[in-house]
Length: 472
Ligand code: GLU
Image (cartoon, rainbow, N blue to C red; front, side, top):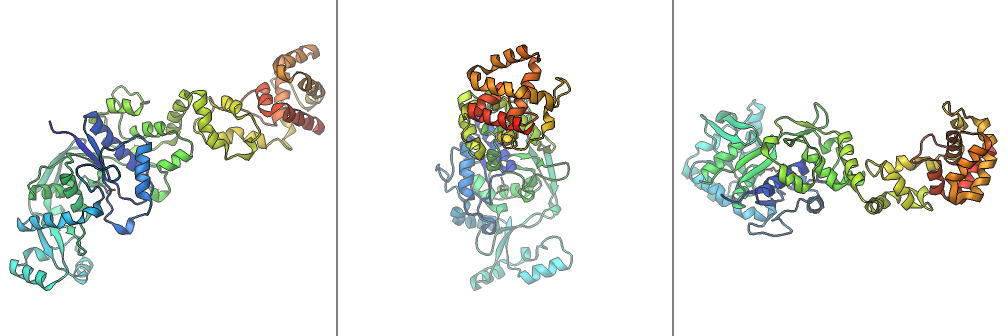
């Protein structure tokens, strides 16, 4: 069997978004599952959409996510160059072959004629130049007339191919247009370049978005016209933001980098996007990249669009967060702690131990530690607790004693609080409630009274307890 060769062929138009990364992931998985090669090709012929820096983002995102490509612009390979604009000399020769055997033709139509055609209601090019005589074409070429090369689609019949996800796809030839293959500046269009490049790079499995499903018959006619073997195709349904809108950067939907910034782990991002359009036979949902390579199969690829669900992604992320060692969690969390000045001076390692079981994504650090900034002037009604029958009066009665024991027994706070309760006729829950509220001024905190005191340290704890007392 021939070696499986798949490719990811992004256009460098900005950040790598989730849909693009999903295509790359499936192409990677299919190649690796079959012991083949995964290739990166940059499709940059559309200079107007080119965004400087985006090629580097593509390289770094794929590598960071673990989708290591075997061949590509920055890693080399036997089929380079892997940047389309550096291949521009290759295309014309093949377009001319198609002209020679009648599968394409020179078109000299002016912009004005095409506009007129359009204004008169034509929905596609009318094959005007397909019938020019050989002599006329030669004469106009010799004269230096501006031209494009168009594909010559048969007017009758139909073209069929088998998509490995969607099954047989048949398109009536009359539905297809004689698209431009070579533009007047000599550059190929995407429609032509993808065929030539895929063939020359030995790509035998083309995995890409479903928007290309119905153009693929045109591409197949080009393969046939050039006497090349058609590749197999796997088209992927889009990822939706909701029932009617595609996930799209136009709507500000997030890129890989955005998710990293939001505190998602790369393993979790890859895991979640694998599930956007594929499910495993046993319905498991948590997979490492290696497990995905092992489990991925085309029978699990969905025929319908998938909906991006950030809650689900968070949940998947939380599974990975929980699996981190204390050290790894702390190291990763440090980057996020830096965003909050009020955390400086705290025992951050201790904070990490409190947050580890509570963080779903690392930006939760903000929400979970916000209470630290809300102490000054907190609402005293927080002392009211129906279950423990506490209120401001109970707090006022307790606090002098609580301050005293904090001074004397900070290192043994838990036991000291219990003893204090027993000696003064309070239930444990009452003491702990009053202590925690007086210390934090917050309804909920990522830990109990003693943990909050340890986090704040003795001095800050005393300052806060005294402050609360002074307000009662
Ligand atoms: N450059 C095309 C895109 O970004 C690639 C399509 C394909 O994979 O053939 O949509």
